[in-house]
Structures are given as structure tokens and as C-alpha cells.
Length: 98
Image 1 (cartoon, rainbow, N blue to C red):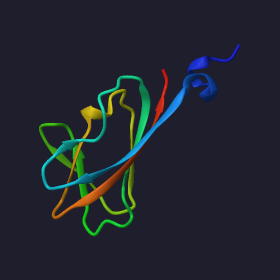
Image 2: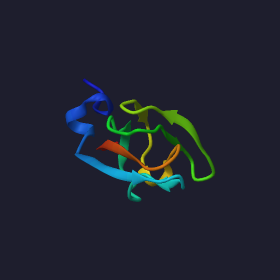
Image 3: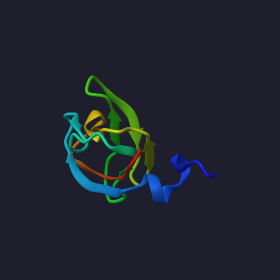
């Protein structure tokens, strides 16, 4: 019998997606929900500057425009991002499930 944990039809009940405008101040990526099994972040390809991602304490991991980062988190509000300078946009999509 197959393990349901690895069956996407069983584990993915819905999709969570959005876009956030970033400034040079770190801010939470999305809402406080606790039922994601994966979150994919993308520095918008139209950005003129890099974005930095991390925790509420520090955002130090850089993404260049168009880069993506797969983040296995349940709660997107635990991931913070900011623009390296000026303003930028981050796109995100997540799978809800176990």
C-alpha cells in the first residue's frame, strides 16, 4: 500500500499564493496559517534589486530577480523578506496539506 504522505492528491488540499511589495524593512511574507507543507518564494523577475529573506531577526539570504527558493515551512508568516535597496516584489505559492 502506498504511503499517503507522498501522494500529492492526498496531501495537497489547496494552494496558497500571493505577492508582497517589499521595502528595506523586513516584513513577514504572508498570513499566519499553519497548514502548509511547502512554500516557494520567487524574487519577481521585474525587480531592479535583489531581495533578502530570513527570520524576523535577520534577512541575510539573497535572491536575484527571477530566483526561487523552496522553503518547507507550515506558517509563511515565519519567513521575512526585504529589498536590498529601494523597493521590490516577492511572489509566493504554497501547498496546503500535511
